[in-house]
View: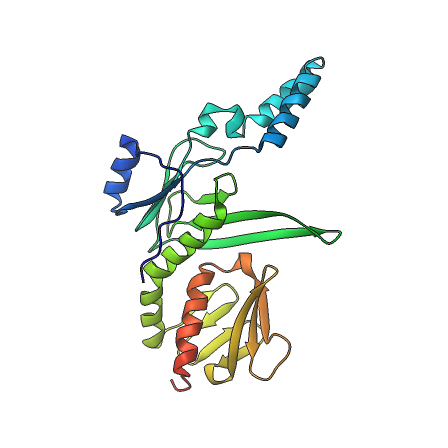
Length: 253
């Protein structure tokens, strides 16, 4: 089933981006995201603070330099874009110049989405997606610097599953194993460091909550094994593999 196009900011491709997309065979452009601007209240607060500090040159200068990271105060930052294509992505780093190109079929994707609860009140959600190339090349870190992380984050995870999931499943069914952080997936089950091997026949499910991955064994109320989400590359591929292999209930070599 095709992944739906995420809502995004309309942004034409520059000649440089178009050339890179063609060279790396990234396919059709699916979405483009601009940097997320400060809300009216925060913008007004920072502007008032800057004006107030103008009587103190050094603090005002430091605050101005700090505010330059926001697109509201910097044309250079406002011009940056995250482009999502069928086969990969092109993006401007938040704190550097240039363009980074990565393909979904070879990238290692680490996700770290968290939300602090203060006195029972949910705080803002923070997004950190780290994408590593197979060998060499530049890595990319995506945060809520770009607008609508709740749209582009899941879309990227689905794109990686589309590109790598079938090959990963074929690899495992051929009798080889694939490592996902502390876990190894094979035809017969999941192996976890310090816990041994859990057969698919005894596997119940994988839960992902509060930044942790929990492997649940049938009949047990506590996780058989657990690991941090942020330590597992391509977690969405792991979840897809577990769903497919659990359905097969493979127990033999």
